[in-house]
Image (cartoon, rainbow, N blue to C red; front, side, top):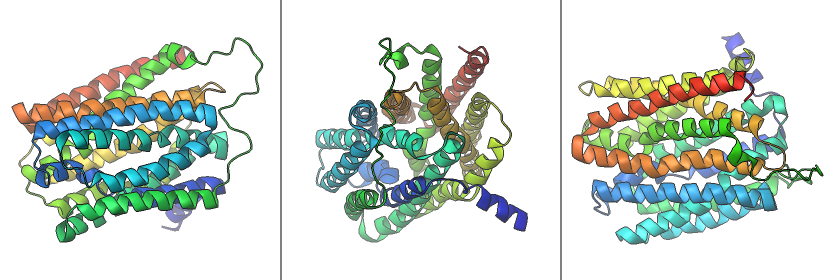
Length: 403
């Protein structure tokens, strides 16, 4: 037991104070992000939208995420990650507060589109901040610590949100979401100082420096396709799965929150020592991405059996371990691949891959459910995982060939 504890503590050593502060800020921000996991239920139960309408609204969520990721990358390369993060969190806080007053279909489409465009401009910026505030050998664990904080916050948030919804309804959640965004940015400005040098600025005088190199990097396009497919399956967690838990297994919001907390609990307890252990193995990043796709595929295969509530736990465990490998190592691949001076553009394309999945995953998934039912949707979702496996094998082969 003592050895396990020492290994756990060791996994946190050597990380910069700025990474710890960024993790604290992410914890506060994500703990306040209470409404997102229950958005599909809010739209259906409180606003009375159909599954098709919910799919369209969540597609707008994804479009906003896509636009925000692109915008955040461009702005990060121009102004630096610090200014982008400050502006994004402050405006996002105000947007969440206003969102509760929108009740029409088109109003909510435009409202969620604007909110997510501003909110997800934050993502490329915080990814670039990892390069600014951590050593190369600590980047994977720095990503892991940020993810731990985000997931801990998302575990606290939905669990508390489930109780708030049962007791007071949904509207209070929008206030909490907005206020915590603003609180997070105040903490950020107080604790973390802007670095003197912007990590996206290169000192090179090479006239042949290509600002559009990311779009000509075919190997990186393969990686982006894997991230898109990974997102197409994974984002069922915030669209189809809550409805599935509620409609097929009759779980209320609090029980759904407890099930989601299993995901967060595993990440908080195991991800950092797990990543620390894997870093010592010196295995290629592409192999971890492949394993993540395999686990993701398996997590939806087990859902085809819908007569035993235990499959929900098994699925969530498989999905969680897939997440623990998939997100840190796809991120690390980008940090290693990104060319000096255009890190923001690489991070933007990485974030845009998941944002694109945010657009199509809920819309396609909920439409399939509406016409054919949940089981057909899980089979198609497994297909995303299988394609991800094939592309991961191709990516691994190209990296071995230094392409």
